[in-house]
Image (cartoon, rainbow, N blue to C red):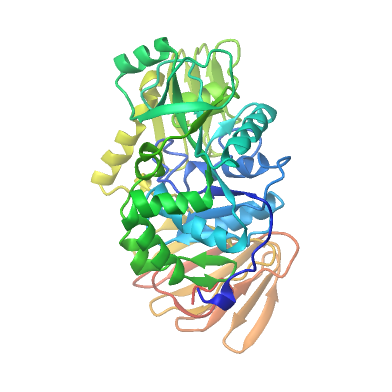
Length: 485
């Protein structure tokens, strides 16, 4: 980044700048969440996706606009959901490689200190649930007072049960009914069931929520002292980065050299700091059992989606994400059953934390269901394969209002488009034409073509491909409004 690229500093007194982390592998809530579309972007609960709920949770706090950290494959999805939440998607930083939270936060801090004077960073994962938002706001305001004094602050959740899926924070004393900031002693990794029970019984341990308030300048100084390799590579990646539409891409080569390490290991375990106890209905929605508990089970402990039906069931979650698949449970107890178009999970509820094993097994079998969906999201909309043979493929394509596919051609296949609803603007070499419902067009092999939606409603069409090779890499792009050419 050159000096001309850098924004002018905003002389605010220790402004609070949120950093929202939008990565993740999506394995723990398979088959609804997968690497191609992880849980923070899924509609798992009423009220919108976890990501949008995270952004909405910032409303009412007098903070600067948030920065978003995500990967290249999710950049347009993040931008779209930001716009849905009423935010301008102009502060999205793209990580070229997954390197855990410390390098990502370091790179974001370098960017933010150029714009704001002495900022404080509110680090938030994008996949958490907060039941009582006003109580969360109160805790954040208490934390801000400590961070303005130069303290590193973390948020610890008051546990209501022994939990082996979370890390813990040890305090010098039991916080009791106090919800005020207090010093923490140390961070503890995910414990055994026996140790977790002992810590909950002791009373002076909190769950590590993964949320932090960090004075940016002190954070960068601490990186220099405690994790110089992280900050050196993060700084190089930031300086070598470039603008791409509304995104900022960190330098790929420099970022690759960053060690993969969390902010807990790199910084928080090396310093003294403050913890704010949280009792506001926090949940990281890490398993289907927690989705069940957050979905307000009925009197029999049953949660059913619209496409599911429970008969004589107890303490069970039944969810169907495919409108054409009816999921019926009969006489079930303590069961998780989740169905999508191409995958079904049936598990004992008390073993829901083992779903990652399912994904690992599918990967070992080279099953595409491990990571990918039949529906593939693109910045212009989405497509879904509905039929596939040795020399043909049939897709359903939906182009959102104003969406535009790249100007492209194919080496190995021809295509036929049939408009189902909406209006299509089609470019074929030098010609343009408009197609409406039940009209079609043929795209011969090698023809330079483009599909656009000039209308005010989504464009839906059926595409029939034919040829000896039908892979997605059989595309030669000439122009693209999403900078993919």
